[in-house]
Length: 148
Image (cartoon, rainbow, N blue to C red; front, side, top):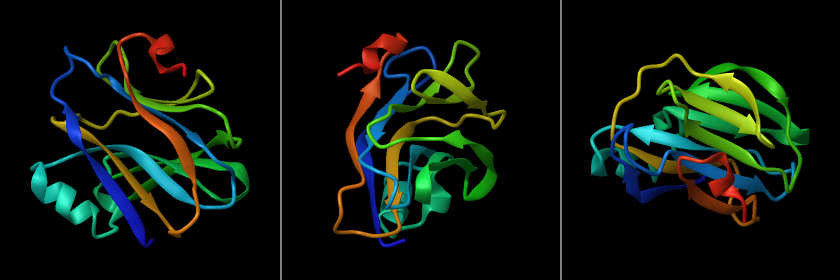
């Protein structure tokens, strides 16, 4: 894992917006994780830029050959279907204040892990130099807010 980034903007609480993130994987040949991270703000952002995907609280792991996994704080929660390049993946808060993982609008997993705010967007990739995701953006309260 040799590439990572974290957002400056955050989700401050469950009542406001944004509610999460969405993105489109470019393909299925470069493994990466993208999700929501919490901690002490700048400290967590600094550690994330050190390529530590374990600091991402709620991570969608787009593995090789289209395999989709969920990780929570570096631990593999499980395999939840497959994804395709150009498909839409969402990691967002639902009405019950739980983090949902969706592929093309279908819920694949709902986390039971306790939320800690603020949450910011975070990405970690196994290889740098190749595009692996596009259209990473914040999601509002409506699932339709994520459409391009």
